[in-house]
Length: 433
Image (tube, rainbow, N blue to C red):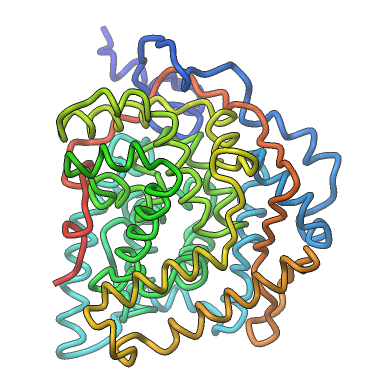
C-alpha cells in the first residue's frame, strides 16, 4: 500500500505532476471570485504566433517600437531565455571578463582578514535567505536548487563587494534561474543591478531604493490624489507596501505568470515599468482601499488583490494607458524626481559633494539621452562591448497607443509564500548595518 507521497514519486514525468504549476510552484486552488483580476482564460503564450512571424530579437533591434509592443504582449516561455539575455545585453558584460570568470568567483573566496570576515557574514546571510526563497518550489525546495541559487548570489557578492548581498536579490536570481542556467543567471543579475536599477539601489543604506520609493509616492499623490491622502491618513506609506514590489520585482507579491510579463517589459524599458505597474495596482484596488479605515485592513486588502492579479491584459492596459489615467511618462521627469529625493534623503541638501558624482552624472546623461531619443523616436539596440555601447532600448513613443496583449492563462491558484519577514518587508528590514 503506497502512501500519497510515494504515489507522487511514481509519476513517470515530473512535468505532469499536478501539485506544481508550469513554473514549478506548488499550486493552491483558490475559489473563483468575481472581480477585475479574474482570469479570462486567454493564454500567456497567445503571442507565440506573433513572435514566429517576426525575425530574431537582434534583427528586431532595428524596429524598437515593434519590439516594445511585442515584449509588452509577453515573451513566449520557450523564447524567454534568449530574449532576456539579449535585452539585458548580458554578453557585453561577460565578454570583457576572463574565461571561467563565474566559476572562479563561485569557487574562490575574495579576501583575507577583514575582507574574509565580511564575506563570511555575507555567506551566512545568503545561507539563511536561500532557504526562505520560494521554499515550496519543486527546484528551490531541494538542496540542489538551493545550491545553484547560493552560488549565483555568492558569486555576485564577490564580484561587487561594494554592494555585496541584500535581501531581495535572492528572488531576482531565483526567477532568472527558472529559465537560465547558473552562469547566464549570474550575468543577467549583474546587468539588472549594475545597469537597470538606479545608482545606490542596493547600497548598504539602500539610499537608491529609498529615493525610488519616494518618487513612487510622489507619483501616487499626482495620479491618485484621493487614495494617496487616504493612505497617508492611516500611515500606509509606500515603504510599507511597495518595498517588496521594487526590491524583488513583484516576485513575492503577484502570481508568477504576471511577474514574468512585468519582467519582460522591465528588461526592455527599465524601472519605470515598476512605477507604472504599481500605479495600476493601486488604481484597480482604489475602491476597496477607500472603504478601509485601518492600516492593517488596508495592507491586507492590498495583498489580497495582489494575490489574485491574474488578468495581465487589464493590468497592462491601465499601466501603459497614455491617454487618460497615467498619461505620458517622460523618463527625464522620473530621473529628475529621483535625483531630488536622492539629494533630500542623503541628509544634506546643501553640499552636493555628499552625493556620488557618478550618480549625478548618470542622471544627467539619462535625461539627455531620453530627450534625444524623444526627438526622432529611434533607438539602436546593439550587442557591442561596453566601450562601444549605445544606450539601452528606452524609447517611450507615448503618443502611439500600445497594445497590451491578452490576459495570462493562470489557473485560480497561487504560490503560497511562507509567512516570514519578507512578506511585510519595509526598507528598514533590508537595510544593511
